[in-house]
Length: 175
Image (cartoon, rainbow, N blue to C red; front, side, top):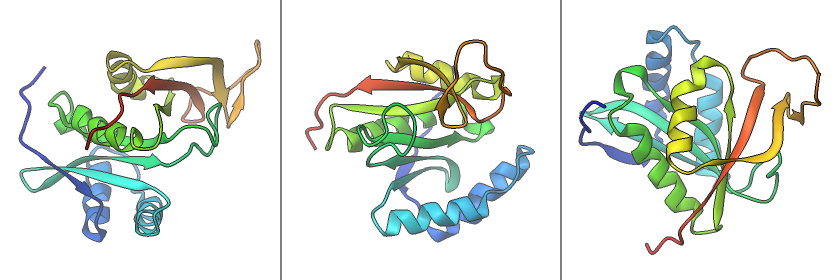
């Protein structure tokens, strides 16, 4: 593992949208301008929290936290980490753990557990490993596809719609 970097974790700002999109396109991914604008609007209205990691003045990643899951087996029951990205050049340097620490601490103010869904293709490999190392466990409902449990022997595509849901018990936050 590479050394950890000094970083700032802060709420998302309007300027972050262009910076995040630039990092996505540098990695060969499509820009997500409309999604990021929605996140900022929902953060400003209190519908969700969006935390950005900044390293040496550069956006290194972000995580969003919904007060309650909007889909999956934890719908309406647990807070949900719903979007989590650490840009490749900042991975394995503590950025993801710092973002998850903040999201989990915020979730602990309202719940004894937090949930998330993770894709199953190799692009999610680093996140899958990180979640397991941090104590997230599958909920037992199996794999979900397009927001529904996938029955045994059913066919699906191994894309972003194929998800395993996990949860983690939290310690009550003291801050």
